[in-house]
Image 1 (cartoon, rainbow, N blue to C red):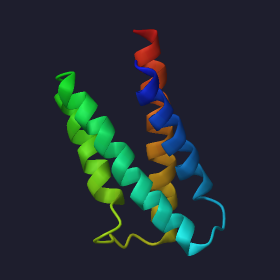
Image 2: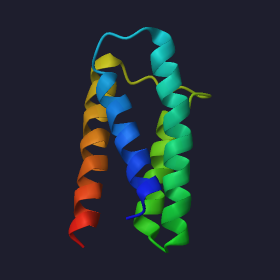
Image 3: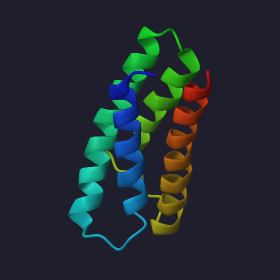
Image 4: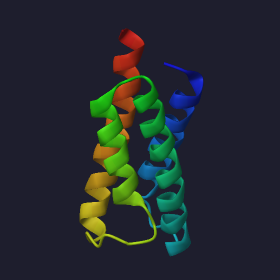
Length: 99
């Protein structure tokens, strides 16, 4: 895996795990914007590497987290999503490292 992809995944995972804390609303808006960009880049890189499934997953996550048309899931559900996505990002790095 390229270092830029690993850096994006680590940064996104940390930002998502920090969402579990009681942060100001502006932080969550910031995370949505950064997640849109980060997942967009990961989707683009996956497409370049002809990894269609990963491209669809990252594209879907970019749409889920995008800040323009908010998806109201409620705090508890967003916390669950943040944890699952954060663990998934870390898991994908571990999986790619073992290849």
